Image 1: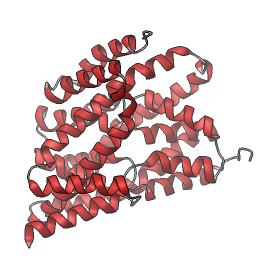
Image 2 (image 1 turned 30 degrees about the vertical axis):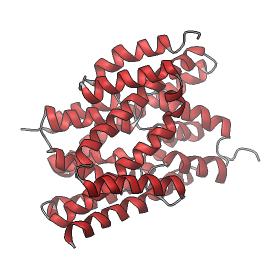
Image 3 (image 1 turned 90 degrees about the vertical axis):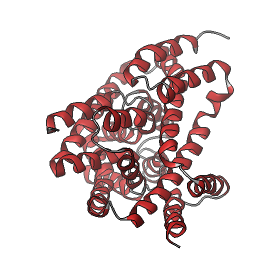
Length: 174
Length: 179
């Protein structure tokens, strides 16, 4: 039985661990939501992630959809409060403090050390999504196609992503 | 050109615009385009400081940046309106798409379409990650910590909190020793 309180606590904690942004917190999000609490199947997680990718704004807005799926609009609202408010207050406080510490070398030191950890977390996020996503020849080829197109042209990534969806649809049903 | 003041409504509307058009990632680029280049609300240097700060504290970069720029211009209310504007369009579209998805989630065509979308989206993040991380892959000491973190989280499934409390302090220590 999931309560709104559960959602608030789980997403509140996740947000405080989200050092390195959305892609870095993705493995933890998947672990908590799919493995630990089994609120979503791996397929549902992948599909909600896809919907987040074709919406504008921060790509981790998909957490709202998880809340909506579990507890309706109240769920989406509570997840939004839990996931965004603590970080906003933290960012706001640190921005205020920053004005006093702007020249401090410790912040540079922290950033230098955190950078490789954040990249490692993002790599883990991509790896985990890759396992859910690249499951046959067509998805593999679509991934390669996306990297090639985005490397050699300046097309908006969303268009390429939507195109990949259409191609997969054609491949499966023609 | 001198820095320009920002009206509260204008601040909200600008972030609402960014929130509505920033499809496909690269949201930082949109924020810079609108707040630095078009509106002259903050300078390039201030933007870089805000960006660094927003990447050091927890939370999504785009949201942290909105908080900092909103606060810089109009204090707490400015920060609130900037975040609200940033979140509103994506939330409405996502919940609309989402209710459709929940209704049709057993439909095989919908599943196929989202499968292709996911494959391309993962490839896109992978490419962005390689670009962002390039300097980390090229320095031996950083690369070691990239790999340790990847193995701990991606393969061994260590909880994030454990990694942040153990590997991160070590990385901060080692990456600041002189070569």
